[in-house]
Amino acid sequence: MNPTKRISTLAMAVALGVTVPLAGCAGVGEPEDLGTSQQADTYIPSFTMPASGYYSVVFYTGQYGSGDSFGWNAVGAGLSIAKAKMSGDGTNPRTVSSFYICNNVGSDHVFHTNLYSDFNYVTFWKGYPVTVKNGACHLINAGVGSTFELGSMKLFY
Amino acid sequence: MSKPTTSTARRLGLTLAAAIAVALPVREARADYWVPTEGDYTLNICSGNLGSGICASAGNLPLDEGFEWTDFTELPQSDSPTGTFNDATNSYVVCNSTDGELTVNVYVYRTINLKNEFQHDTLVLEPQGCEFVNLTETDASSIEITP
Image 1 (tube, rainbow over the protein chains, first blue to last red):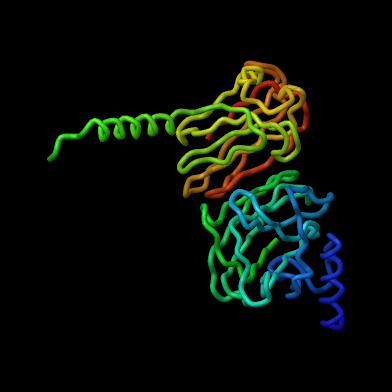
Image 2: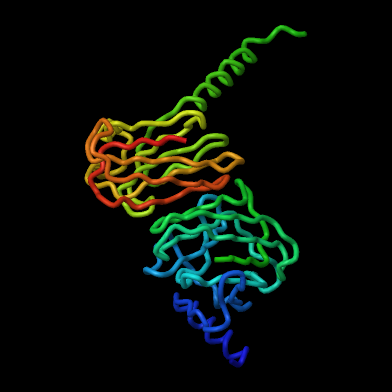
């Protein structure tokens, strides 16, 4: 598959709230690149349970799920994701404080999330193996009342 | 050492009172779920899905103790936002503000005094983490949590 076309197709799908697993490109321990375009970040105003067979991951600027949010609300079960160059202004990393994962994949699951302060998965900030019940959401107040700079992230299914 | 002044003593008294207030579990009705203060956990049961709507909240819960809410009609209604909490219960939220992982068991009952259990969940809460769980039935009347 043409890489340029692949990212473009995926970015469009995510912008529409649907993530399309690509055959042969994704799997456990092999994150799917969500691209670097800010258009791929979907604004999600509140906790929303994705459709059956999907999970979601959403970041907030404020603690405990307050403030502005962005994320991906329809990631297919079995799909790991990676997002580089997370920037609101195209230059600096995103300033965030908390994030949640909602699980509707059909069973309880542990999602391994790594957060990095740089754009390219080098400067590790925090990592969470988040256990989420099926049909539930788990919110992490990662900044413990403060904000942090989020430049990239990987979520291993 | 200088003798404490009246204002100093008053401040110390207020500090002690504040410490006691923090240590004691409290219950309130809220327009949304209650996030915890440092070093404890909270239990919220809410009228909407995933912690939305009106919530009955128990906070300042010490880590070495469970908590039982045996009758939701005991809510201080004067503090409640518009609407009656008991109209429906659709979800609960548990938050952990400690620096360590917290495993809790939550039991939800149809009737008061912890009778007729219809849901039991074991939750593993990350440090500074909250879990939002929808109920399988909408007529819960009591709940208990055990760390």
